[in-house]
Every structure is written in structure tokens, then in C-alpha cells.
Length: 267
Image (cartoon, rainbow, N blue to C red):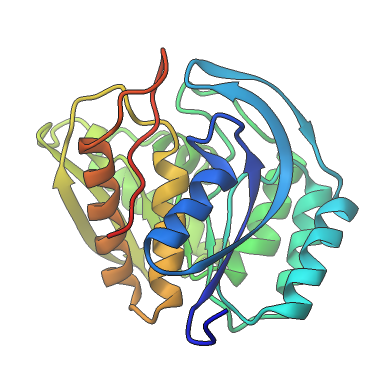
């Protein structure tokens, strides 16, 4: 391996259809020239039409995957996705606590966009208590931000209130995705809101009307991690990652019978 190549690690679930989870993450890492590594937290049964079940891994199994990677590679960045239990979260936190200087992107997969809670309250408490303070940035969508902050996001001020709650939980930087869905927002512009120690940065792009959105949150967070790994500052990393995902949506291959995957390719 080229010693100059940065290694990025995804700790997330496996989507066998390839649109989301670690299969999408490793392709996004590679698209930015990073060498991908991954640890599987859950084996899911899914395709573009839905999620039909999962076999969650234990904390011990996840930890046994991670330790050899950290023993062998110097990591440039880490991204977490689906962490299905407090047991898994505690194991991940123990291992990542040994590399405190490596940027960590936490994609808090805690609630589906349809409003279904994906982890229990004990796991949510563990996630916020253990991983938020370690993170370089936390990347919830609106539904996830509502559950984490314990409030409904119905107006622009609510975005700031939710970010303040997450800052209080230890997250220095919070990217709330899907701000264009707030009433009164320009429907032609997709705006994500990045809060860095309470200061807001709006990251805007074209809103693309499409059903090909499977895995966009996974890919955005892994693209941010890759850009942090190669030395970009957070605002630039998020801006580049959002443009990457927008282009991937615009050029989506049109696969599947449901919400199709996007087009992850080298920049």
C-alpha cells in the first residue's frame, strides 16, 4: 500500500443490495483516493424497496473486528453508521478511545425518515454519552435530530435549538441534513445546516426530485470522513461531500424497483 494513501474505516451495517451501509461507504472512501476498511455491526436483509430484518452483531464481535485493523493501520478517519445496541456502542467507544486524534464522523442512525425508531433508548443514551464527545461532526437528518434533541423541528429556529441540545451532549459540530424541508424554505434548494460551536454555516445545493436516494446519508458521512482524512477543514469537507452526493444523485443509474442507489464514482 502507498504509505501516503489515507485509510478510512467504516463501522456500520451491511446492506447486501450495495446502496447503503459499508458497501456504499467503502466506495465513497475510494472515490476520494482513500483506502477503505470496514467492521460490520449488523447483517441486514434489504433492497431498494425496504428493510426486511437484520442479524445484529455483539459488541465482542465488533471489537474483535476492530482491534486487528487498528493494530495494523494508521487511520486517517473513522465513520460510524448503524450501531444497533448499547453493547456495540460501548465496544466501539472503547476501541476508538485509543485513537483520540483520528477524526470521527458519527452518522446517528437512530430513526427512519418514516419516524420508526431504529435503536432503543439505552442505545441512544450510550451513543450520545460515549461517541458524541469523541466526534469531529455528528450528521443527523431531521428525523434523527428530532429524536436526539427531543423536540419537533418545524421552523428554522428549531434547527438552532436542536443543535444546541446536541452541543450540550458533547457534539462540537453538528450537521443537520434536510433543512430544505422546513416550511418557508426554497423548495429548489437543498440546504444542510452545519453548526460549529453554535455558529451556523448553510451548505446549499440543487434539490433534485428523484426516487434514487438510497444510501445518501451513509455516503455523505463517509465522503466527509474521506475529506477530513486528506486534510480538509470541516466546512470544506462538508461542502465537497455534499456536491459529490448531489452529482451522484443526478447521475443515479436507475436500479431497483424502489428508492434506487446513487452513482458513487471517483471524482
